[in-house]
Image (tube, rainbow, N blue to C red):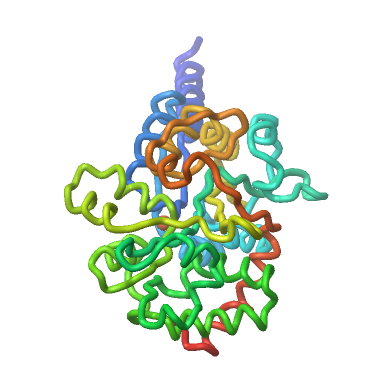
Length: 347
Ligand code: FE
C-alpha cells in the first residue's frame, strides 16, 4: 500500500465511521409532557446505542413547526397526545406511512391510521386515557354525573371546573359528543357547561381536581392519568385531595366513556427512518407498554400486554366501557366545535 493509498483508506474509514455515527441518532418531536417517560428513552438508547435528541412542545406547536420546517425538518419521530391531532397531522401529510409487521401485529386496527392505499400506516396509537368526571363526595354521588350530559344540568349551576375548551383533550371530547348528540344538541350542552362553571377555565386537569378538593368546584373533568398520579403520590397533600373526591366513568349505560389516544409516527422528512421505526416498535413492546401503564398511568394498547396499576384498577373497579368512534370523525368535528365554543363563550 502506498502512502497515498493508505491515506485514502483512512479517509474511507473515517467517512464510514461518521456515517455510522449519524445512523445512531434519532430526533423526536414530542408532546408527551410526562417526566416518567425519561426511563423509556434511556432504556431504548441503552439497548440500541441510538442517541435520542428530543424537542418538547404541545401538539399544535409540533404541527406548526413541522409545516414551517418542511423538507428541512430534522424530526424523525413525532409523538402526540391527542387522536384528533394525529388525524390532522396525517391529513396534512406530515407523517411518513410505514410498514412494520411488529406494529401491525401489536396495535389493534381501530387504534392506528387506516392503511388504505398509502403504502403503509401513517401513525400508531400507543396508549389511551379516559376523560372522566370527579366530584365532591360530600355534595354528590356517582349517579349525579353518570353521563356527560348531566354536567349541563342547571342544578349544578356554579359548580363545574374544566380547563380551556380549546385544549385538545376537550376539543376531542366535544367532537365525540357532536358525533353522539348531533351539533345542535351539543351546542346547547356546551352552553349549559358554561352556565354551570364555577370559574372561568384556567389551569390543567390537576388544577380542576384540586379545585374540587378545595371546595371551589363541586364537579370537574379530568384525564384519568392525572387522577391516578395523585392517587399513587406519596405526598400527603395529594392523598388528602383524592380522599375528598369521587370519580365517575360517564355514559356506561350508553355509548361509553370518552377515550383519547396518544400515539406516534415517523415524520414525513425523517432522515433516520430505520431508527424511527425501531423506536416505535420499542414503544409497542411489553416493556414500554408496561411503562405507559405504571409510569404514566395510561392504558397500554398492545395486544396481550398485562399490567398491574392499583390506581387504574381502583378507579374502574376492573374494567369500563369505552366509546368506540372513528378517530377521523372526531378530528373532522374540531373546527365545528371551536366555532360552537366561540358562540357560547366557552373560553
Ligand atoms: Fe396531559
